[in-house]
Amino acid sequence: MSSQPLLNTISNGDALLLRPTGEWTAVNAAALEHLFDGIAPQLRDAKALTIDLAELQEIDTLGAWLLEKISRRAAQAGRPAELVGVADRYAGLIDQLRQVNRRKPSGAARGSLLLARLEDIGRATWGAREDLFAFLQMLGALANALLGVLRRPRSLRLTSLVYQIYRVGWQAIPIIGLITFLIGAIIAQQGIFHFRKFGAESYVVDMVGILVLRELGVLIVAIMVAGRSGSAYTAELGSMKMREEIDALSTMDLDPVEVLILPRVIALVVALPILAFLGSMAALYGGGLVAWFYGGMSPTIFIARLHEAVSVTHFEVGIIKAPFMALVIGIVACSEGLRVKGSAESLGRQTTTSVVKSIFCVIVLDGLFAVFFASIGM
Amino acid sequence: MDMPERFAIRVRDLVVGFGDQVVIDHLSLDVRRGEILGLVGASGGGKSVLMRTIIGLIPKRSGEIEVMGREADPGLGGRRRSASAWGILFQQGALFSSLTARQNVQFPLRENLTISETLMDEIATAKLEMVGLAPDDWDKFPAQLSGGMTKRVALARALALDPGIVFLDEPTSGLDPIAAGDFDVLIQTLQKTLKLTVFMVTHDLASLNTVCDRVAALADGKIVAIGPMGDLLTSDHPWVKAYFHGKRSRMLRPAKD
Image 1: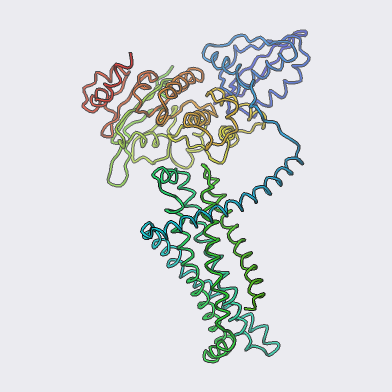
Image 2 (image 1 turned 60 degrees about the horizontal axis):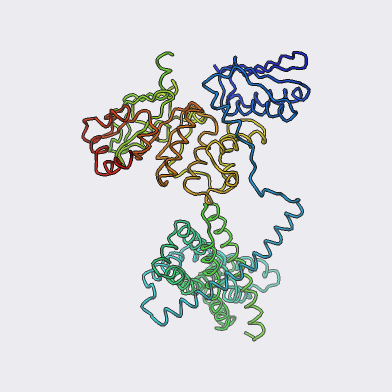
């Protein structure tokens, strides 16, 4: 149906006559570019160039641009091309393409690759400093909003707070219970399997108890909450930012931190210790079940040993960390949410950053607490 | 020219509905080659549904749709071919937010043609210049572009493959009168240079008046009036009367001349 484009070349002494035929349209793009590449070297040697369009069937932007490129090449060598036989129906298009691709965007200077790498590193380092500032700023804004609420308790968004606790606390219980149950069971199973070689199976109870109550219970729960609720916070606040909802709040003389962020962060601070407690219990339950069915240790003995092995201190060490972790997760998630720019891609990037950063912070915080508790002898 | 060649789009007896609701009810419409047809209709009255059915985004219940003399089938096979047959300017632009303006225009070229990177770059730049985008805006992301520029880039993307037909969904909505006027002129110029058939859904009485060769009015799922703007102004259909002689359109009158 569509006829192949051709470019007939007629050399007349030093003069070159080009006669394009067929359909010079985007459908034949590959063939057209091939034709162009083929003619390019000949353009250098010709003294005069004429392009005769009389036999051309069809032309669109792509074809017209290639013809324009040919005449520009010729013009560069000091021999302007002459266009003859231009039909009315595409004269406008050819005229239009005379104007294009003559300008360049300003300031598109590109440095060397090494410099670009160095620049990236520099920017990333500088960015880390800004992250710290953003964190401190959000902490300050939160403290400020909290003070405001303490002075006027009625300004606390109670409905929002309860709803957020419902979302990040109550609705998270099943999945967090399940995961911690499985983790407790796995630790107990591995412990029994390996301790059996030394005949020290009964110490599994000590290991599960101390590990879960002090470290793993709260850490696993905090990581899960960061992934589950932190990401949701970032995405929510980010899309509110994109749709200018946050600006709308500010113009109504409301503080977005007080209205949106404070209830969310308080909800996390309230919910995470509860979840950590429930998670620890689920893990101990899982460990106990495995000890019973896999290790042959009856529940009575398990509970008795647990009673001996762990003290309230272990539980305290674990649970004290929870609200601090919640605060870190909340602040990171909310400040990343507010940094979302207009595009969908930015929302995705900020949500990823939020989760990665809050998990990193939670683990670093856990390490700092370990050092702290060790030095005060808890 | 022979008869079917005269029409870019032929719609016969089209029925489209969702559930119990029939939105397009035995509608017939011809769009001539090389004309700018404006489609008006009540908000929620099925204008966008009609456009989306023609381009195959919504399945039809019955009827025939022919685009450029070929049956447009919204089945799996039909979609691919149409990429170069028509370009669509969506109401919000629908630019890919992770690509720059230039990359947005290059996208259809990259997906449909096998040409070198340099040529692709030059074609994309040519299109952006044809729609009047300043060089400094070529490498901006959609979030950094104003409403008018977004529409221009979207139009450049719609024209990337030099389609015969462009569908414009409310091209001037959300633009100030100056920008809207400029956009109207742009559509007219491009229509002349590229020999386009333009199917335009719009509420902008000014663009109906200045740009469109013919105007079709959609009411109760049918085309109730079609013809040059003058014919529609004298139409007897109550809805058409209300539309063109309502309070708001009268407000425009004195300002126009």
